[in-house]
Length: 516
Ligand SMILES: CC(=O)N[C@H]1[C@@H](OP(=O)(O)OP(=O)(O)OC[C@H]2O[C@@H](n3ccc(=O)[nH]c3=O)[C@H](O)[C@@H]2O)O[C@H](CO)[C@@H](O)[C@@H]1O[C@H](C)C(=O)N[C@@H](C)C(=O)N[C@H](CCC(=O)O)C(=O)O
Ligand SMILES: Nc1ncnc2c1ncn2[C@@H]1O[C@H](COP(=O)(O)OP(=O)(O)OP(=O)(O)O)[C@@H](O)[C@H]1O
Image 1: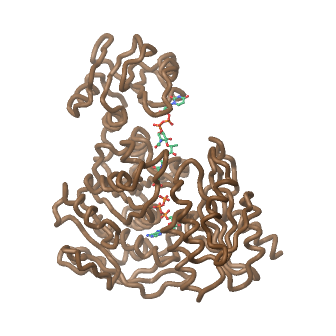
Image 2: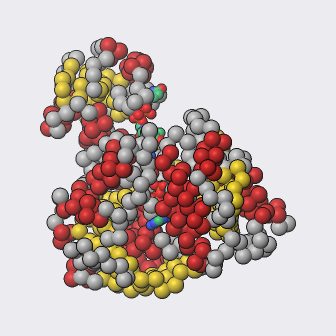
Image 3: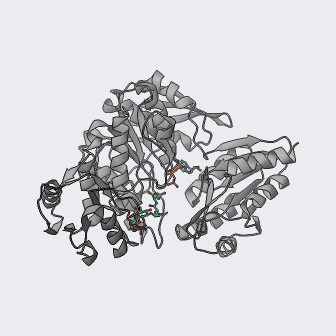
């Protein structure tokens, strides 16, 4: 793969991004590798100087190791002797040039994108499960759990970001296409838009699941308006838009979709019985619960409008995943599969057995009730999870193990206090990716907001011990919820991913030890 300097200049000019250029010899020069990391350079690399943490010495190192051209928002003396492309916005330039370098792999994939505060990963896994049935396992996935870019074991790897950096995104897409993948399902975070990771990318289908305040803080969004604005961009960049009509801020969400998409290609879904008198648009798809218990979910989907009826997806569906909120995610995935050409029976078959690492994983014990490991880590998901448990088990005692992350999502902490007060009888406040913050202070901050007449608390910073204490304390009929880390096998502490066995492994070990 390669890209000529001339092509780079043309692309940047076309998008009004080029401020100036310094060409050393000829514009025909070809770059044969692209990178934004000085630790990953090859001969004839095109190097991007980007990010808050960028240091000019990285450019010196890149040059020394073979970079011949750099893209930056200002000229650097360290780049003397290299071609230089000085741009208005390096993250946009990187997205556009990466897409061109990797020969526009998105054109050879049916791309489906999910955004929402909650349910992106679950919906993505559901849809991948269905599409794999349809296309014989040729669905790539970019999620916050795993990325899948091909059929071999080495094509599946743990992701480091929900939505990869643009250069990595287009490289992964190219790998997927070269590995014969025909579809791509991806999660798109609000941060991906804020940082232009998906700049210039158009999706065949774009889903908006829901929005509640989250990801607001020093390293993320300055306020809710910015968070919402970033999330809405997904709809602006989708050929067909599918929206959960029950989402907060529906009017703004729908308006964003109509900026680039004709209402004929915008689909709405909601649970049966949901009415919003202010809603002018008809709901295309309705779902209604048939059964939701610890065995899973059973629900019916029906197509309510003329355009919805064009899809052969009416009927009953079962999910192995528990939690009534998963019917929303399931419905979204089913509509996505229908729009991608799948029919009811294949969809029902594809979605039935999908499970997702770290989401609603349950372990039954002989004497200590039910233990659930779940990725709930903000107010909306904690509320949804505990509400489900309360109704499902006829008001059981709920014991929660939870912590809040450091350095980001600071605004989530009052939400933890509120949800624990509303539903839990006991909470073990523990460590969850404290980063550069003190986990004790984080736990105390959550504790300070809890009404202790409703929810007793204990601060136990060692997460494994906290889990052990919670399960040991539980009696039959109680529910232990181990929240927030999902399938993560590490704790992020002071910039280091410190190995951690993962919640489900700890839970299984504790149960084995207690019940041997
Ligand atoms: C705020 C944010 O989005 N930051 C991301 C961004 O950082 P950045 O561009 O500022 O880059 P940086 O890490 O400061 O480093 C500067 C540059 O120096 C380079 N470098 C560095 C060291 C060296 O020796 N040589 C060198 O060249 C780096 O490669 C980089 O290009 O680009 C980096 C990759 O290039 C990301 O790792 C980093 O994500 C941070 C770690 C992060 O935690 N982001 C979170 C907030 C995030 O994006 N989360 C969302 C999910 C949110 C949700 O759940 O909805 C996500 O999509 O994952
Ligand atoms: N539609 C939903 N509404 C409310 N809560 C949900 C919904 N779907 C999932 N959850 C809860 O949120 C948790 C995370 O779900 P999931 O990983 O699918 O969401 P996500 O959008 O990918 O989250 P994140 O951005 O935090 O990675 C689940 O473990 C569950 O507790």
